[in-house]
Image (cartoon, rainbow, N blue to C red; front, side):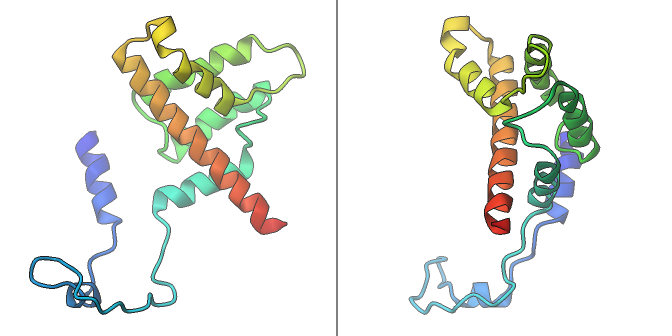
Length: 153
């Protein structure tokens, strides 16, 4: 499964261009001539596009109880959440169950607090990895949402 993910990732990466090779010397050191970037030279990765699409639909800092399940399904559908990542998502499900009616869940804050309590709660290595991966994903979602909100304003 990891090999397929790596293969898919590598297939979606842009190939090196001749202009990049020309600006580097024999040892890969820049020769000093800087060429300006061409318009359209930057293109976001497929993962960044998928994260932006999910972030447009869900505000991870204000999730309703029903939205937690919907968020998980959307992340799985887009391939952003798979395998052991689902176990890390259990933290959000547990917190959702403890919310009073009508309150929202701040997934980013919850994961921040969970990471800070690793040593106190004696969290195991694999669970730490799962929480760290979920934190990174949720942080990316929050960042993408704030960027899109700034662009709209």
